[in-house]
Image (cartoon, rainbow, N blue to C red; front, side):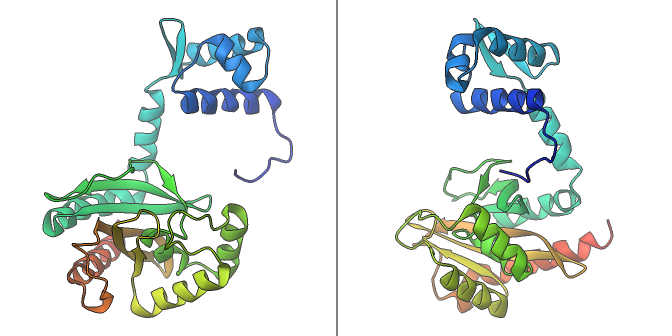
Length: 253
């Protein structure tokens, strides 16, 4: 949930609820949507018809689904993000070099959002896709970003999203997380040791511009292929060098 509007427009809020419900349900008929949102069928139909008129919803045999217009908008937003333009080629290059799964992520609304994803020749396939978001406390890219944020912002994110348990390795207390962020700053990269997905390790390096963190790049692989002796891990130098090149290139954008 984002910041509360001082003077919310109820019809806009309801249309957004309709969009979110259609996304959650994977599409719905008028009656199903009305029941889902506890609204009248006529009101549900009016919202759907308006969204359809503007191209945000299409019908498939009386079932309303979100249109590909959202994909168009999302693609344009991503392409206008300076870090994406600079980093995307380096994400592909690192995936090719490491052979593993590489992500580029940024923070928005207290969560990490994936901007780019590339698979090396032996990469595992995870539940990630462009635009999806995850909590930051149990991911390497999240901790890489959190470690560079002001303490007040870290507190806000913890208060907003909490520290939910994902695996038995997940950090779930604020003191433990702050200690981990301190270790992350000292060594220059973050780690996820089976904290979001059992059997998976991840390392990530922050990407900074003018002293501000603007994102992070990460490598993910099965525990058998990522050594937990972090200081001598074979991927650390590749990762940190890539982050440094992205930072340097960013100055010329």
